[in-house]
Structures are given as C-alpha cells and as structure tokens.
Length: 264
Image (cartoon, rainbow, N blue to C red; front, side, top):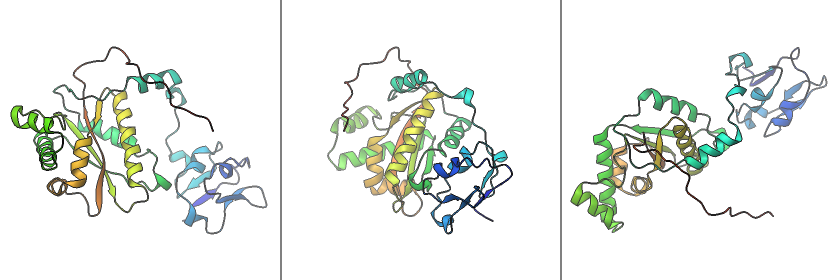
C-alpha cells in the first residue's frame, strides 16, 4: 500500500499539503499535483498534517481516507477567554470527595491523550491507572519507606507513622502513571506533556489533579516500588498524577508574580 495517495480529480493544486509537511517529503509533479519524493516514506512521521489540512479531501495517508476521519467541530472551539479561565482556575487538588472516577470517564480521558504531542510523533507514552484504594495506600507506604530510608521530609514520615495521614498520594481515588521505555527519543518530555494535557482535560471535566512528585521520586529510585509497579521491561516512570473530584470549590483566583519575559 502506498503511504500517501492524492486523488488528482479532487486536488485543487493549492500546495497547502506541501507547505504543511514538516520534512518536505511532498513536491509538485509536472501536472502540479503533489506527490511524495523518492524515499519519503522513510522520513514521514505519520503526523497526519497533510491529511488534516487538505481542504478538498484529496489526500489519503496509510489507507486512511478523509471521509474516515473525525471532522473538526469549529463550534466547539474554545475562545481565548474560556482558555484563560481554565488555566487560571487550575489548582493542585489534594482534598477529594469520596467518589470514584469511573472507568468510562478515565477511558474518555485516555482516548483524548492519544493526541498529545510527542517527539517525531513516536507516541511512546504508556499509562498505568490505579483506582484500588488499598493499592494506592500500599504505594504511598512504600514512598514513605523511601523517604524514611533517605532521611527526607521527616514530617511526612511522622504524619504517616503517628496519625496514618497520607501526605504522599492524599487518598486520591485515582492515580495515573505515565511511563515509557528509557531508550525512547525523549520520554521525559513526552510523558510530561501528556500528563499536563491530562491535568487540563480532567479539570475541564470537573476532576482535580495534583502531581505526585514524592511518588515519582520513589518510583524512579526505590526498588520495592519499582518491582510492585511491574512495568514493561525497560520502562521508567516519568510522571504521575493524583486525580479525583475536589471536595471543596474555589471561589477566586490568587495573585501570581508578574511575567518573566524578555524579547531577544
């Protein structure tokens, strides 16, 4: 099967797909219709820019025709004011209602995250989701063991030992763990972008998130927790997020420092 095919009868010869291609693998032929350069299939990222941008629906990528693609719903586009509100009202939520995040909603979020950008569109990010409260508390306890052994944050260790208070995973109903193979092109950035996307997407659905930094440190450095997670061979944890429905609602937007910007 040819990687990219162009329906010459539909093509308007506007050159838009050529201009959009990140690696210049399309060029005009003698008739003005775009075609792939020799060896272009080895360079193509399969990002789908050419397929997505063609206004006449003339281009097919790896057998995926325009008619089979989900259309862009412009009426759903978020305006600048709504985006600003979403970004300003995002909070690190650490106090949750006693309400689980359903597998249906988690599945919808995971589906959206397939479109989070990754280096060269290699899509190396894998997810491990945990909503078993016993398992979440077990992993919080392992993180406490790591903190104790490392002589770090004694107040967190003391709260766990004396009061049973979980200051690691906060009794969150759901823990999302992003992991990838250590030899991926840029696993740290890819997982971080995906997790940031998840936090914002969850916020839009009324679900609060908080980065699980202490857990992430233990998952990367503490053998017992690494073994408990049982990730695929060669995979490391690069991001983790607590998720749940906020117990309290926020009424205002706290101030932040001014922008730290310079123009070069």
